[in-house]
Length: 406
Image 1 (cartoon, rainbow, N blue to C red):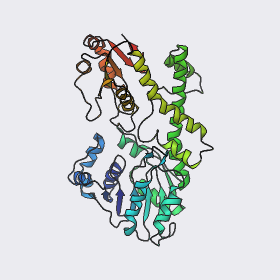
Image 2 (tube, helix red, strand yellow; image 1 turned 90 degrees about the vertical axis):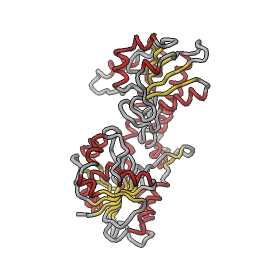
Image 3 (tube, rainbow, N blue to C red; image 1 turned 90 degrees about the horizontal axis):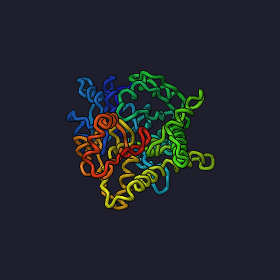
């Protein structure tokens, strides 16, 4: 059994992983370039809104086994868990942090080490980028160094549940590497562990999120057609889903988060000819915030200098995560057009409010962009009172309820 694990990157993915591995008995070193992050971990401060992970972080065994520092050190296993954002201009993966993470461990690699890449990457990244970097040391991947891709599968708000109970795909550049990685993940994963090759694992991760993106795009396109026909799209979807082999998703205000708006582009990057549907779905979903902003403008066209209160800035309901949020895009578009927009969210840090009635005072329109359960509950119980304090009693809701109530 490996004794010491170094994890490069202690963010949304890397830090929870470090915590569960420390709990499993490994000596874990979390490496982060941000000194305040390193200090927080070593001081026992967890800056993640994940209650279950916080509880585990406080366990004596975890505190004993987990240490953070700014630079790597020798270990048995190295795990790269850094972001792979999208280059917005080129629409390709920005692998600079992955490359930087791999380069940072090169001075500490020794024969027999296992290197695991958890970051989501385009297919062939392990073979064409990571392996050649490692082999600059003179060590041979597949012989003296073992390399795997094990893509993360977590959801903000349910990190521990998904980290432990989800099935995992482990892609090794050879069978020995996959078996070595399996031993690591078997120490905390209760779901099934599926072994395959690295390229398959890279593609599988992208397929999972692209499947969601394409099906969301279909729902959003149905919604646009239904609007033109004056059809209630939610009723139409409900009836269509009565078919035993149909399961249409609900439309929304766009796609967000750290995966769905990004990963499909990685497939297009490696094979643009055979990813036309994927590309089109991406374009459809990227257009949705613009359409929602246009509908808000149309609703308010008769009101001079309207004051808009937008509620919900996270990328989806009942999460605190605002990464790639379509709601924030809508707010930005309206502000760029000169509209006065105040944005609030009960779950997102920096956007909290006391009550809908309080923030809606004097507003011309209350736009519910993300319907967290707590928002639904307050609207259900106090909608009449909320409208009474508004200058114009307009409440716009997108899809979970009728769009406009007056």
